[in-house]
Image 1 (cartoon, chains in turn red, green):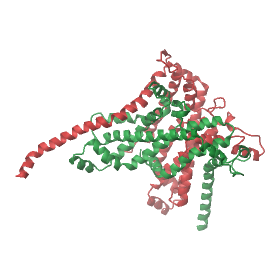
Image 2: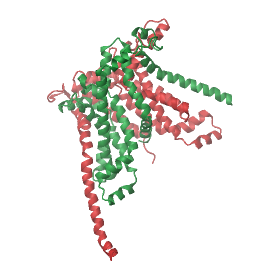
Image 3: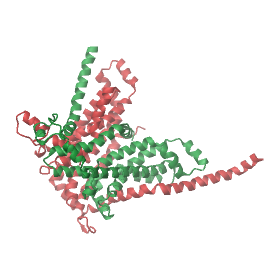
Image 4: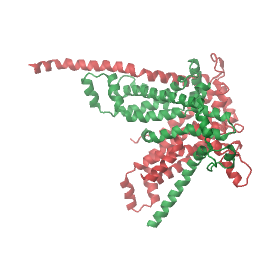
Length: 308
Length: 276
């Protein structure tokens, strides 16, 4: 009897359950989603859209922008030698990342990816600068390269040379910035490679050995091809990171001497924000945005396409 | 064979030690510098101090300003982590559990933050924060940081939530547990690994952030430690030992935190980087 009733009622019961699920769903979505949407719109999308509008005005940030200048800000920026230098500097950071930092990270990863106690210790040491604040790294190095007080001062004295101040040398100041960037970030890239190397199946390496591959041959024909995805990701991080360099430069050179060591973001800060030229700064921001999006889109098209 | 191996091993360790000294040298000079007089720093930056002076470190530790900076940074970082985890997880839960019209579109919208550097919108962000009357408040840093961190957090959370066993939800459902309660009672507690990873990451980023506080905080009362540090550097321009001691004391918590949380930091980096 009971069983019969159950079967008779069960369609409506499932129907009820289904309806309750659907209504519960809506409530949940309405409660849980909006905080993220509101916050994101208010503090990410709205300012970003603002950049796109302000970039066409000459505006000091007060009242509403009225002085429409068309592409004037962009033209001024493109013609400004300091901006051109800052773009060059950002490109230099990319070059140094690709030519010095990543090969160094890969070499170190190959040397210490096996799990042994001494490797773990080295791994920790090399990774340490990554978690320090960039601003602290810049400040520490501004001491190290100080011609009177720092290690560079020690060196020049030991060699009997005149004190040398790299951060006041127009042609070398930005090199100091790049040294700090390598110091701070090679460990990060190394960690990415180590994680990938540990994922390479051991029997593949052994098989290559048995077939007579040298140590170098194994690295070149087995390990590096196997960690290709990790290399692609780390190159991407280097390029995107190079576009954002700011904190390191401020304590080290502050863009000087005579504006020779600006990056795109320190240029944006110095010539846009610090002078309250919101319109001009926004034009720089928009340019940076376009550069970042182009890099991301092209890079993904070229390298990150998932194998079908 | 063993001899060749031994030589190889010695070369390897030797090379690693050279790189390690490149990494640790500047840090060591910084820590030691805080114990030296300026004259001594000037004659030799790397050596051990002839006399270990502790008065500089003591001075800074006794300075309420120093603690104020650290406190401000701590409040801002903790609040950023809490908000990012809560708001990010709530949104990710909706994307992982609930299929509705427009869900893909909203998810793509929230992922836009992955596309561009924070600095691109810093000027209008400053205007926005000012117009909301938030300049010089903790919120001026917390809210934009949270908003910019949401994209990555939601992406990572959604993947993790999607991998939780579906049976669990069905079982809880039959027992009369609704979506919101399920989120609180099951999804969040079961997701501690990913919450910890994202949390540690957001914390480090907030703790080290410089550009945003620089733009939206003007009064010393509200300064975070990176701003305080630059202020201190400006005040004691020629007294390197003071600056070095200050730097040491501010990076010390970071190092301790790193050693304690390295498991999550490394997992977040490598997992997130290689998969995503």
